[in-house]
Image (cartoon, rainbow, N blue to C red; front, side, top):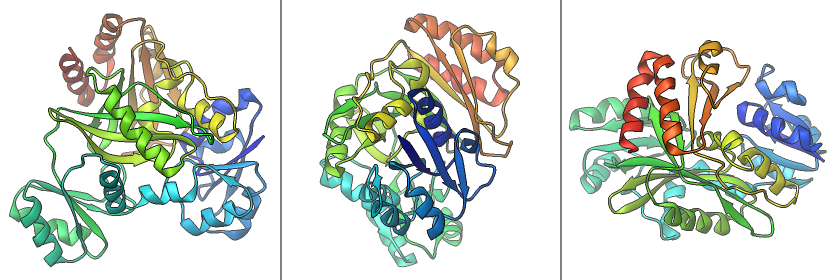
Length: 373
């Protein structure tokens, strides 16, 4: 079977790495001629809206995406010729933060207080309604902390409006949470759904830095109920991830990603079937694989540039993933995953990892592990 992927970044690369041993072939569409998945299949270099390029991809048996902001018209053109999974409606639901929050609310999920902001008077009214501190975000195209500004005092309003105003925005209450978390689920076209263990996530400068599984708190049942409601409502096929805030009162839905997700990269070594393999199984109408945890795991993202691998590879239980991307500030260029047989063994391996991490991450990981008990 031939899989077409819109986007050829690291997520598409890891899908191909999972699919090639299963006999799948891959084609990618990406504007970047150096896109890192291109080494593993046929890369079509063109704009997302290029009709000829889309028609070439439409010859594949299944189409999927490695990011959610694919133009709706492009997906519609592809869907007219072949099976697109997940469907365009599922991607559209994640492309607008305001509609996303309204969907969560309609499905009975708790969310941070929010309000639409289109004008400066809207912003003032939203602050009056929600209060400060709050976060002002673009409704579309924001990721990894981009397109948002934290408002703590009235003095923050004008700089934020100057930077973000003139486009549809959303104001959200700034939540005092105990932890951030994420749950990844895979759903088949027949409606079978399997969930991976809830992960604790830690961000640094707006970008996911660490993901720990299983999460050191028992919210699995609630998280599974939430992600099931979302996936069933969207008639979703493939993997999706729901990002959450963990509070003393329970879980708040933050946002969801209609694709394989950074917070579940640990599943490559840490679960019986990785998220990438299960996404492809769902696309191909093959039986879903087990999402059972093999043992506790911790993933660390490499941001900006890859560190020298030799020192890290001396740590037992460490798996190394280099995305073959050039160095650039703020860019995800690779990750490493630590696995162990039990929690105490993982903690010991994390202590060893802490000694060789870049300085800015040592304190972050040490604090994370200490709060994990």
